Amino acid sequence: MIRMPNLKTRRLILRPLQEQDAAAIADLGGRDFEIVRWLTGASWPYVEGEAEKFVGKIVGSDPFQTEAAFAVTLGGVFIGVVAIEAPGDLQDLPNLPTLGYWIGRAFQGHGYASEAVDAVLDWAFEAYDTEAIAARAFEDNTRSRALLRKLGFKPFCLTERFAKALDRKVSNVVVRLEKADFEARKEPA
Image 1 (cartoon, rainbow, N blue to C red):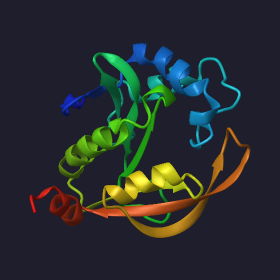
Image 2 (cartoon, helix red, strand yellow; image 1 turned 60 degrees about the vertical axis):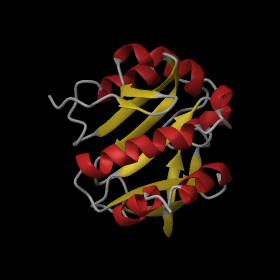
Image 3 (spheres, rainbow, N blue to C red; image 1 turned 30 degrees about the vertical axis):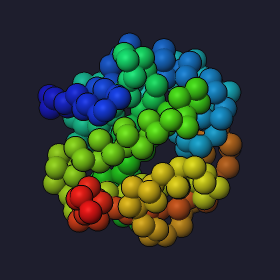
C-alpha cells in the first residue's frame, strides 16, 4: 500500500483520512445542507452509513487509483477534507487529477480552505507527476470559484453533473491549474 504523508501548514495538519473520521464527516458535513448542497456525491437528507462507506472506499486503497483524501485538522480537530481524485473523474480533462474539498461551516471564512488546498496542490503536482490539476465547482458556488481563481485556476469549460442532494443536474465550471502558474505564484515578487 502506498503511504500518504502528513502535510503541515502554518495552522493546519492534513493527514490521510482514517476510518474514525467517518463520524466527523457525517456530523460536520453530511448533516449540514449548506455543505452537502455544493457536493455531487452526498445525499440529502443524510443517509446513515454514507460517511462510513465513503471512508471505507478510501482507506486502504491506492490513492493514485481512487483518490488521495486528507483530513484537514486544526489543533487536532477535524474541520474538513481535501482530496485529489485520480485522473479520469472529468470527462473534459480525463488525463488530469481532480481537486475536491469542503470545510465545515463553523470553520469557513478564516482562510483554512485556501491554506489546506494550497498544501495539497503542492504535494499533488509532485506525487502525480502532472503538469496540471483540474477542479470543478457548481456555477453558482461563488465562494469556491473565488478560492480556485485565487489559487490560479483558469476556466476551461462548463459541464453538468448530477448532484444527489439536489436531485438534479447542476452546471459546473471546470477549471485547470498549470504547474508553472502554481509555482510562479509562490515565487517572491
